[in-house]
Length: 178
Image (tube, rainbow, N blue to C red; front, side, top):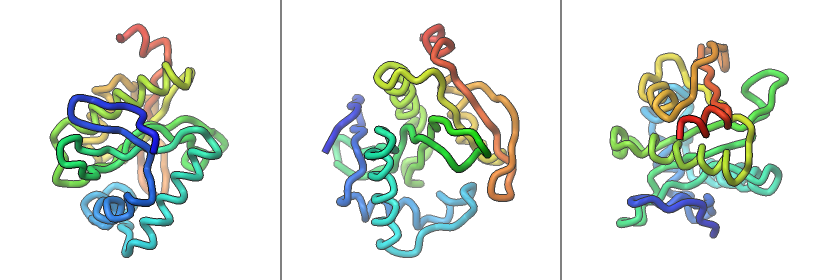
């Protein structure tokens, strides 16, 4: 199992089959899915399908979301990181920054901490020229995190029948900000 980053309190590693229960706890919570079309998963088979989908991204694109693990308890907190996205924006493929965290860990700075690590990895290890992100316009917390880590608002766009804010950070901007 590959570990990508260790912070003072977290381990960011590849998502593996043993994360089935953690993914289920995360993605079966309707509150977690409030701004994601509100389609929480219903069973652990769906968790396994999510894990297969992410692992396929590792193989095909060399990157996919990372598991967030609490260093002390070894608990699965959620996922974070980059993904090569080909479905959200019409005729535009890009590297997407995202995160999804169990509700009991909201408000603890985990999304910000892990997003900063994902940006660093994307710009230094993967040498990406830019990274994008989208967030539902009403998801105040997620929009706040994206701005806090340095992404700048570009425009709004419609996805799955809802309006989303669209953000971008270029490598040159990231370097100048650090």
